[in-house]
Image 1 (tube, rainbow, N blue to C red):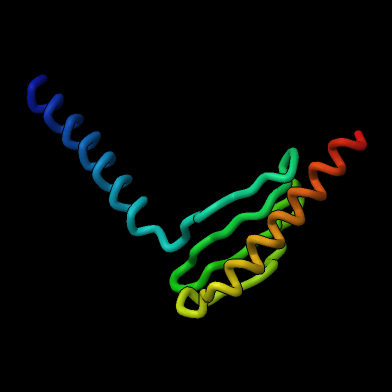
Image 2 (image 1 turned 90 degrees about the vertical axis):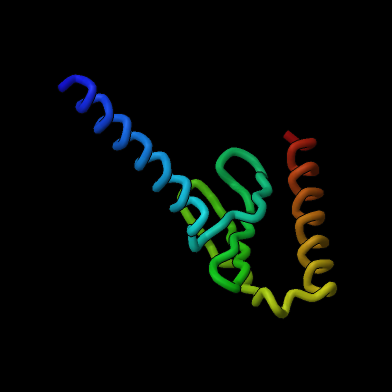
Length: 99
């Protein structure tokens, strides 16, 4: 009786672990990158389906900055995003120096 109970509990834990792993792989939304700009502020690059979303994140708000189709991701777009992130980092560093 005790052995059967232990087997059932073990099976429940195993199935929970297996299903959790499976759900993590099948998620429709993945965070590709996150750049913090201070306490609870930053930019996230998220992939949802075939789209990549750039989202501004603050403590009280989320704002869609840009939507990029995965197939349309060109070198110019990547360069523009990289330049924008560098500009924002410079602004953050400049603000931190003044404080």
